[in-house]
Image 1 (cartoon, rainbow, N blue to C red):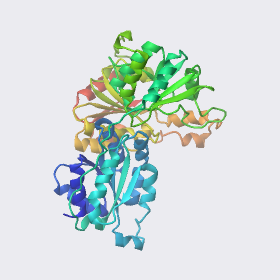
Image 2 (spheres, rainbow, N blue to C red):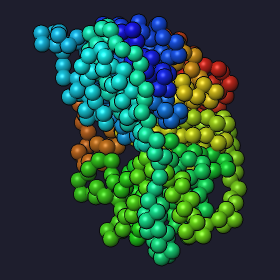
Image 3 (tube, one colour):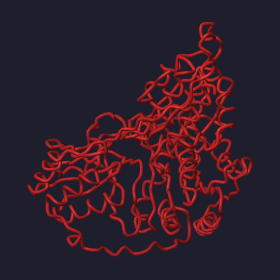
Image 4 (cartoon, rainbow, N blue to C red):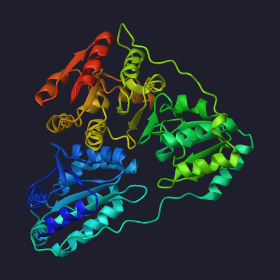
Length: 514
């Protein structure tokens, strides 16, 4: 077999059986190997940001890495924004990036670039295979790196001649046999803080936001009277009826500061110190109050559920300490479209075991409280802040979980970054409902313009923030890529459209026009 086939067989044997692809000339032998080798599902994306974002969504739901196939440095560069988001979310991905044949690089052909230099900022592990006989071994090392706890971005660069020359065979992946653990001393320190009676916040993300982690956090809160919150953005959170509902730290500094001002202690469970998303004149970067002590109980990759169980034992928290709270079920709204009525309609419509991918940005800031009483579901968010995240992540989540309905919520500005995701969803018949909030403006930027004190925007500034001339027609865009859809401008029609979209098997788009 050649190097490309040895790599594909190593990937499949190592449990990597999905490849999100956007190949070029240098990857044709790898494409041929994908064609020959059984066991690898190949999903084509029409832009590399779709490919890398889909791999992120796949990992978040599956817990194991997919691979990507990208064309040289420019192809990798096109996918870097969503690799940034994936890295911030601790998602494991095996990137296969084609390179010119080793002997061709010295001639500085038009597509020659420093691929390793491009890869390093968004990767934990980078390697260029020097020859065909090294490819399988390097591929196995990439799988091991991507599968680590927490997940990592592993980028393997494959020169064309290492793909077409003769190789030895497949390589076995040497997975880390150590199971994730935690520090008993850190748990003891957290228990001491909770027993002190001082106002304390448990700040959660990562595996602590699973149903099991939230259940333990609820017991601890009931016993010790501490507050439990999530980070502003989280890779995945279990939500809905029967699950402990927690709020997140608000994005807006003026909203976050009053909520955090009275805490004397913050216990971090995989979370980071609460900081502002951006710097603003005369506003703090750190959101915690002065004099607040921060204690890290677990970091990413540690066993936060086991740590929370140990903490519950240390403070004597039991299931019986929790007083059941009966939440009223969501009610179908009527009347005009507003942020509140949109939130109520979505809360009412979320089906059992759905996956909600949230890039609704300004429109969706009020969605969280109403959906707490929806049917049980998982909620995915953008950890890296680079927009164009939600439609690719929804695509990957649907590939990972074909038996679950995916609901993608996205603003019109963000949707245009990676709108080609709809084509992949149609081609693969993925069960994704995409809801586009069409307010015809980069509303987040309009708010940020005021937030940084840039003054009153003039016409040129407003023209750089508005996307209403010409107006985008998302129903037509979706139809052109094989996805049915409809536009709505009142909440009654939105209710009908949501019900139809959720009953529909396959991709569907709803454009919500304000």
